[in-house]
Length: 323
Image (cartoon, rainbow, N blue to C red):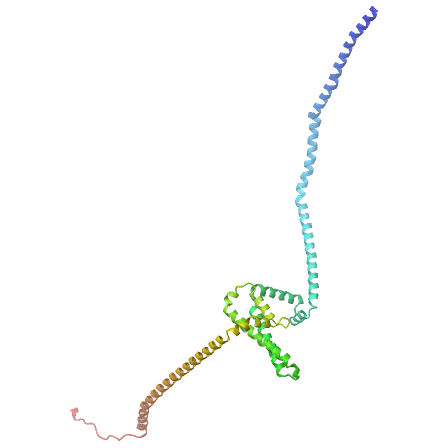
């Protein structure tokens, strides 16, 4: 037993001595060479040589691209401009086709076609001119007075003429009432238009500054006489007739007084002109008679002396004083 214990003790003493060097040897072999291998790997000449070789080809590859950029940019610009021109041509072709279709559609309108044939221009030009004139008329009153006169005065006057002619040439007695009613309407229209024109004349400088004055005026005139509306009847029975009926006596008295005053003024002016003329003629005749009376004797004496020679004087001059 004693010998066995001694051997185990010896073996226990010898085992630590063997394990400790192994651990000590393994630690430097695992850590130190690895660190030594890794640390120099970062700063080794091979890495130092590889870094420039990786950067140099990249820089060498980028440098030619910078030099070739203007050519590529010019090519891109030319391509872009070519695409833009092609797109513009396509758009122009689309617009041209659309205008041709619109022109063909406007050519189907009889009025536009007639004007285009008369002026030898496309129907689209007629429509564009009409639209431009309409916009100018609405915004700035372009040709407003002319259009208002044409549609508010001349055309109704022609319709009134036809009404009078139809009434004077009635062949069927049953048409008398219809013709008389038409004539009454046109009389009412001209009464309303006269009132409208008088108000317009008095307030022209106020109405001229009103926006869209001429379009409103044209619409009102058309509303007054168009057969579909006949607004003159409404205006006459609603405003004109009641006011005139209430003030009829005053209006008649004013007109009579004005007529008498105008008559007296004209008669006085005519009488004064006659008096001045008579006085001027009387004065002229007197002066003429005096001039003739003064001139005729002289002319008579000259004529007599020329026609009748005077007596000859045979007496010699007295030369006694010459000595």
